[in-house]
Image: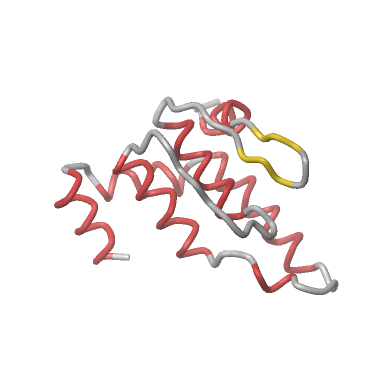
Length: 117
């Protein structure tokens, strides 16, 4: 994690530590932790295909630091990485949607979960 934070801070001129603290204290992370725990209890096939915790954190931090206007992700399974990409995009003030199994998910709902209570 240290190397990632140093890279983000140096390359994008952001406070990587502050972004990580923001993520780790967010209600989105708490919500996602519950979703991940439910998936871990699932005994069905393919439950091991979800993006690992470090990968999810890294995606969130990269999007927050780089502030892209467009993100394209392919190969969605459970939506862990998509949720993190959309949460970071929404936190940056962006708009977007993920199309997954015929349903569009907008970052607005995710953004609401990131706001302080």
